[in-house]
Length: 328
Image (cartoon, rainbow, N blue to C red):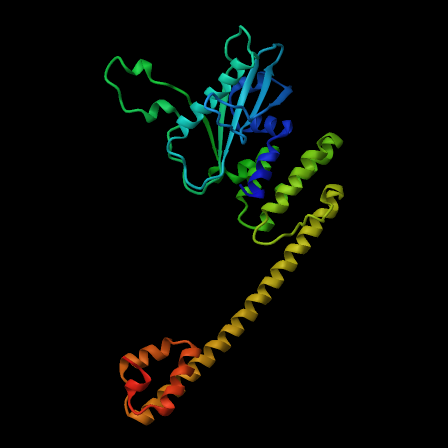
């Protein structure tokens, strides 16, 4: 997994990010009944009976207001570009492993198993067409057997399908991350980046770690050029200083890119001109020495490289027949 992917996951290791993710993207009434002050990160690396470890899980738990009962959030961030047809089976397995861990560690005691919200954040370009409930992956059973089918649904968040205008109105940390991910240009990524930094600045020192994590992720995620480097003390700068600095760097990079394009275009034109000149000279000498130029030789010379034309020209000087120049 690359630095960009690990940095993205790191952002969701902060309670403020999980709270905004739930408040902004789980649009159901029960979210308002959660006591977000009790948000607690669970160790995502537990060992199942078959000794396989899952180290990339992002698992949080939160209590209901006025109660001691926990509710769990199982967040899976999918980095692959192709949707997983059997994601429902994977989710069912992960939730089952979580339940097994709660039972084995004695966390639930004699209580019933806690509810779990499985979430999948999908960052690929292709539309997600996989079934959201594992029971829909099973063939239609005969009458009477349907009652025994497993049923577990997960909540899917597709970044590329999110509406930019709606995201920009949300004032939500998770929404700002999604906006940056969806930005078609570097310039378009600056407003949500600054909005994120403004929130962390207003939140005070307790969000300094989140601010630094955001800077690290944004630094590594920038494409195709770095307008922020590891050496920039963005986490110590005022927002009023950051915005003009980024705008200036983008403008400078854009100017350099234009100049580079012009230079490469000029050089390419000069090389093309030289190649065309050598091709015309070769064909003229060939015609002078042997009369007409066969169509197949003319066609090849017109598309040949400068180096090949020079080699054939040397052969032409001592050749007695066209075959001595070209074995065609």
